[in-house]
Structures are given as structure tokens and as C-alpha cells.
Length: 460
Image 1: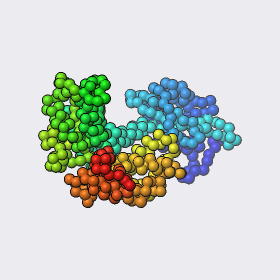
Image 2: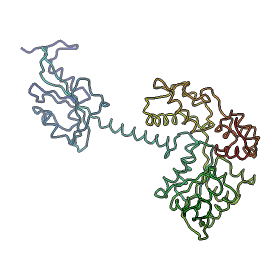
Image 3: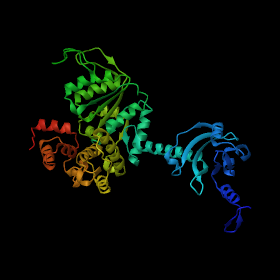
Image 4: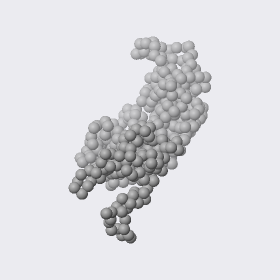
């Protein structure tokens, strides 16, 4: 006698009922008996593989898999295999010739007494999911590219404009002038132009005009012959020769003396130079990038920078925005420095508390990105529970203190840092903090040190 079971809506044979359920499911279903032979293969399984049920009934899934799998693939937890099931994955080629990725999850079927009487497997076509994931990763990559350019970080409008100027400069051999406050990343921009341009195989050489006295700067730029001056015990190539075929970054060019300015002008005009103590001209194929935190045009008006040299170095100008004008980039930069210092120190500092991040975004950052880096590094020392909090920042950030920007300083731009009184007033206003005093005056810290020596100013 046929065993029957009551079901809402009518009487069904159990096998017929189960088959009806399996046939209606959108995923592939195969059922095996105690001997491991396939006893059910639904329409969805036929559709995703192209194999008809008459071709698979009575066979084992393992034999079938060997026949249709092109290659096994690792199974990632992200595909959401059912808990307790055995999961495998393979790439198949359907009867229609399409390559698809199938995820198989197998569960045992138990009798009332708990014995295994077979298995039920679900087959899920995850090809489109994987393709979608690849597209998402590609989009994330595009977003990361928008957030970064070489070693520069920022997705704000001002930084996107800088990236575009870098691309234009890199595609040519134009002489570039970089203008930006201290700490805005002028050296990083110069490096990006060099390493993304046609001179990337050549050397990227740097010289800082504010860090060297006139004679030494001239020697550093053009080289010297043995005996050219006291201490010149051997011939020495200068930065121009070392940068042959590459790029020379002349940093803080506004601090260059009139004598060296004239010699640089001659090099730019004739493409030739002479080592100190020599009369034989030398040539070098060098791309010049100059940088300054000062307005070179204003220096020309003050008679401190040659007008003819200004037009030589200011062919293609890139303005670097201060960090206070791109606050939306602060979280990105903070995350970058978190990762950097985590790798350097090995400390498990994983994030910045929301109130601490709000503090970072509101701060005016007179020292720009360099100051932000210092603040995060300081917080790494004091953070106690793996999260940076407001109390972990330096006082000037935590208490909302900042040095007034040069534009709002009470010291006229033409006099900033050029008189003993101006230097003394800046140091007094900043309680002897030389970095903030230099920022207030609109000069570099090295230039401030020079002015202090020149005017005999000490602190305290």
C-alpha cells in the first residue's frame, strides 16, 4: 500500500512532494542515495551545466565532477557556504561552451534513527558574483588612484588639480616651479614629476639653497677642482653633473644669493657650466625643478631675486594647497600615517576616535602635512588602548592652538625675517618655538636660524 502524507492543499506522495519543491528552487539540486548514486537532478542543475538528468542519474557526483570541471578553485568564506556543509568549487564549461564557476555545498540526509541515507547537494553559479567582485575591486582601485598620486595623498579638488598639473609636467621636459608653504610636499611633487616622466631612468638629485652658504652652494651645484678653495682636496662633481639625464630639484631657490643666481641663469641659458677653479665648460642634460615657500615674483619686486632668472624657472608653475584648504584629506592622511607608524613601531594602534578625528579636521595645520605626521607620531607614543584619543595629541593640536599664518601676520611681507626686531618678535610670540616662529615669518626654520645668527638674536 502506498504511504501517503497529509499536506495543505491535498494529498501528495512524499517523493512527488519533495521533487516538486526541488524543481521549484532556483539553485541546482542533486540528491544521492546510500551508495552515492545521483537519484535527483533538478531543472536548475540542468540549466547551469547543460547536462540533462538522464545523463547524470545513477552516476556519482565525483565522477561527474572529474568529467566537467576544468579546474578546481579554492573556496573563500566570502561566498557564504552553509554552516556544517562540505564545500567545493570548480570552473566548468557548459554544453553551450560558456565557462562558469560552480559552488557545491553538500549536506547529509538522515533517517529517523539518525543513520545517513544519502546526501543533498546545492549547486550555485557564482560566476556573476565573482565578476561583480572584480568590478568592485577595479572601482576601488580607481578610487585609490584618485586618493593618491605617486607618494602624494588626497582626493580633494585642490589635490586633483595638482595631480593633473603633475601629469602635464611629466609628459614634457618643461622647467617647473613649485610654490607652497613648508610641509605641503614640494619634494614629493618633484619626485612624482621625475618618476612618472620620461627621465625616470635618470637620477633625481636635490639641493637645498637655504641649508648651504654661498660658496658651498656654488660648489654643490657646479662642482669644484682640487685646490679651488680651502678644503678642496680633490676634484668633485656637482649636482648638475650627477643629475645628467635626470632631474635636479633646487629647493628654496628664493634663498639663493645674487652671485649663484647669476651663475644658474647662465647655465639655464647656455646649458653649460664650469666647476669652481676650472675654465673648461661642461654640459649636462638636466631637467630643472625649483621650489620655494616664498613668492618669487614678490622677491623680484623687492630686488632679492633676478627678474630674468624668475622667467627662466617659472615656465610651468604648480601651486601646492596648504592642508587647511583641504580638510577632507585629513582622514586619508591620518590613516596613511597610522599604517606607517604601525609598521615602524609594531604598536597595535588601529584607529582614531571620532572626537579625535574631528579635532584633526578642525585644526588649521600651520605646519601642514609634516605637522599632521608629527601629531600622529606623538599620539602613537601616548595611545593606551589601541585607539588615538584627543588627549594623545600635542598641546597645540589638543588645545586648538596654532601659529598665525604668514598672510595674517602683523609683520609686513617685505620685512618678514629681515630685521632683528621681526625675528625677536616672532620668537617671543611663539615662546621660542622656532618652527612656528619661522612659519609666522614665512621663512624656513633654517633661514630663521641664519637670521638669528646674522642679527645676534638668542632665545630666551
